[in-house]
Length: 192
Length: 395
Image (cartoon, rainbow over all chains, first blue to last red; front, side, top):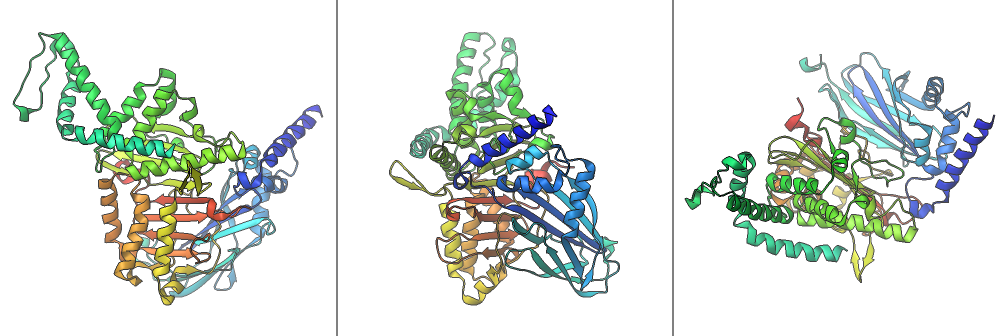
């Protein structure tokens, strides 16, 4: 009980100390949650590499979604639950067909690092879209995760396979959603 | 401070011009001294072009005096080696000179194994306190050690690159004074090496702090700055009655290029969405994004020159010969190099831009966080084919 109170007080003190810094001076993304997504289109599926960096002023808000038991640590179950929460806020479609995302990798930094505003949570989701017909296709991605505090980046990576050719990218103004048009060619020997 | 360093650079330039003619001769002498090893059998051969050979084994005092004189000259050369095309040997000498000023404990903290991937990637735009760096903190060094560290930077960078670095550091000092926050300021920059300074084996110099992450990889006479981060806050400030803009040329050249585009070109170049940060900033090693904007092949010759000139603000942080080789490479690929813009197009406004070609990625991103975004800028310079000089050493 005493330990829990001490820990809570320490966290509060750290938060107050960080918030005490003048925001215009501190001037790193303190009141925004940066969600930067790279979209890698491959011959058989898609990988989303998402870097999540909460600013100092919103770190507690984000941590509240992760550290659900508020014990000051991120357990495996809590990390998995947060990944699931994020996944539910993502909508990925290819040619209008919704794809099921699966978490393929994740790396959570310590809560103390997140509170500094420099800690980044990395997650990678993958989705299989099965065999695609040769020709033009369109991928759409929408991110509705914590919209009131977030800023977004969505970018297609340069394809590593000659069979995939990105032809156009479009985003809405704040990049919470994007479209990637691409051509799929029949497999070249080096892609097999 | 910037002015002091400018004056110092002039003085360095004068010293160097005197020493320049002797540089190669010193180098050949030094190689003999390095390998001679034992005084008892010392054999110093002054450069063969002089046609002089001295067997000094019989007079150790003369040998010692000669060595000291040559050592002093070489040290001076190392500290003043800011000439175009400075060879790696000069940078190695400056690095060794810096190491020689340190005690054992400091040397243990500043040199990491060349294969230390965690340290290689330990750089950031964030200030200390938020992002923990390793190596030696400038504020913990003595005056002589700091001067040796700066002499190393002067040796490794071009005069304009060195000046830019000093101006970025000075901006952080301005920020420290205006904010009263000790996480900012010129003391909060760190120097470290990966590998031992060498003219033949790969090694790396890291110098960074808030808004600065210089990663200079050297492999023989080859050098790269990729990946490196520059930034500034405030991006414009007054110092001793003069206006300083550490990234001013980048900003002005980008707006000049944008202004040169006709309506159709601008429609291609300007993206219709916000870019709130760098896409391939610190922590995004090994990633390459799909290029956007206007392609070099759609630019007029003059506009291509302007694009190259803009890119040279990053490549030119290293010495002229190295920068020229890099620019030649970018120029060769200019038709495949893209220029993208996001944000307002009025000169002086806060706008993002990106240059992306087969061997270069440059991003410039004003930071919108409550203050004036034109006064807080982040940039990144990468080479998707050779970040950290990997093509020279990675199996």
